[in-house]
Length: 95
Length: 483
Image 1 (cartoon, helix red, strand yellow):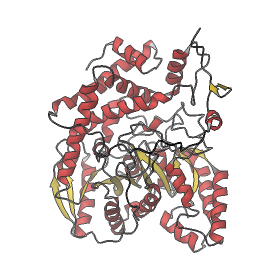
Image 2 (cartoon, rainbow over the protein chains, first blue to last red):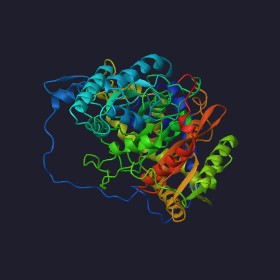
Image 3 (cartoon, rainbow over the protein chains, first blue to last red):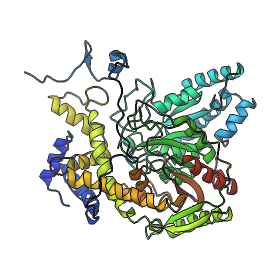
Image 4 (cartoon, rainbow over the protein chains, first blue to last red):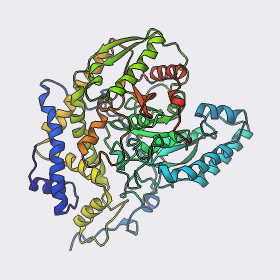
């Protein structure tokens, strides 16, 4: 399936990836080839086939709604790029 | 000393032939000498390892040792290790010191094992050659101009180069079995849900499964005894009675029926590889096994379905890498969107970006049924093929890879060519079945892997069959020149 340049720009936007004009051209060709490979699925008749979400058809386990873990904010924030007063810092969002 | 298996080291430690500190120092020295060439480790935790070894020796002196006490091993850098860099082979996490241990890591700590460090891998486990690692390609110890396979290429190369007796690994589409095959070591991908995924950085959550790489099936059984555990922190972990995978290794395998899928001996398979695999199968006939041709008619749909499921799930999983809470952040972001976009574009390599974009496309509005649901229906067809086959056979065998290890750089310009490397391994992940790669021959001086495919939860039988093969053959004892 041949993707348009605008498709790739749109996908890169959805995926939050800054992609240069030059790279868009490369991805356009590569992603189109991957989607061609994927399109081989269409030859299979899958009418009335139940999608397989879990290999052994297990279902989601539930647990009691109880606190099981203590607060480790300081430990977890040691790996953050920028923090202040226990908050994660990002560029100003609201003027 | 470094050619010893985990089982032999366990015995030697028990008999006080050497101490844990001595064997740990031996492997650390080998890593120091050999790994400049192989590049199989991202991080070596020498100081930690020696401390753990010392603690192990103390426990043993007090008579409190168990089977794993003081045995050195390594972890794939996909497993979070508290206080130690956990990069997942990516620039994105090249500054990420994990704040907790993965369940697999804490299981080994509790068992008393000594961790030598973290092994190299394809970035976020996306690759079949270990060339996508931010920390550089890993070299195959059999021929350093060739790839070790991937994504667990560091773990496989480190075991083959005898830099560690065993290493943890993970398999989403073949990432344990393919590098084990290309490096001439033994690897096992368990049934989906047997080994906890908690703290194992997610690539494609419905396919990912941790498992061991070691020299022998017996060692893989010993590692699986530690790795397999029910874990409430992994919502897809399955609760099952604890099993001792070493208990049935010596059972007779006479009378077992082996299925050979005709689709696995197609034109894609190098004829010399096919001959090696068939020769291995005839060893089993000598041991009293029966061989039967079977058909897995939907095999050809595995790669197309995988390249929807895996990218779709990775695009969701990797959305957490946003430059805000951990990982790489770009310089001087002008606003929040710029921060996200540039941090991710700078932090992720090309292959990861390709897969994220394929996934984002497949999951975008209007395409979900045509891609993800269609692929999940194909997973059902592939599973049904195996379920039908296992009505007639005890185990399925075939090749792991279409050809032996390829040259570094040979497949990097064509992503599709690289994807086809996993043609015989991916179907198991889609079906959630367990599989192994066992050294079974040589082609042009390079190792050939025999793939064993077991029924659900049949790891013990698979290990029994692999162990019996290793008692009858010595492919697994062969080591690269100079090792």
